[in-house]
Length: 109
Ligand code: HEC
Image 1 (cartoon, rainbow, N blue to C red):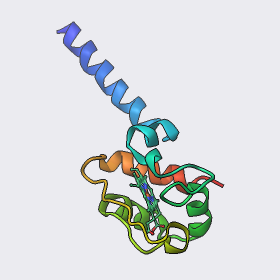
Image 2 (cartoon, helix red, strand yellow; image 1 turned 90 degrees about the vertical axis):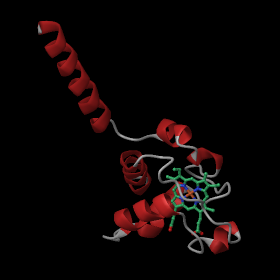
Image 3 (cartoon, rainbow, N blue to C red; image 1 turned 60 degrees about the vertical axis):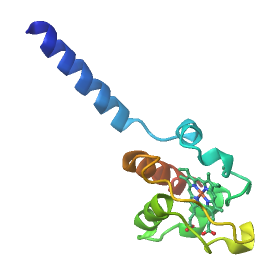
């Protein structure tokens, strides 16, 4: 019984730690984003710093971008990308990770 309690406690501690961990480029890499995105330069998709700059001060940006990463995006960055669409990432990438990635991107300056 004591052992089982210890196991439950350490599991919930691990889950709490994961939830509190901020996203960074390693999560982006693990999620497949870095095949097309970098912080400062356009690869296939726009530079994430340019995305942050475009949506700065937009109260709907977080919800909009979470939706776009989940369902794909087309036409928002045509002048940069030449019109290449972004494929949908849900459910390949979990909702929690997509939220973390969008918070990370919007926090870039
Ligand atoms: C296959 C290439 C590719 C991959 C992989 C990719 N993207 Fe994109 N991404 C794009 C392109 C192209 C655009 C521009 C789409 C458009 O013009 O609407 C874009 C746009 C975006 C935008 C801005 C959307 C907007 O409306 O302004 C965000 C945020 C973004 N990507 C995040 C991500 C995240 C997070 C991942 C990983 C889970 C990811 N992307 C993976 C190609 C990619």
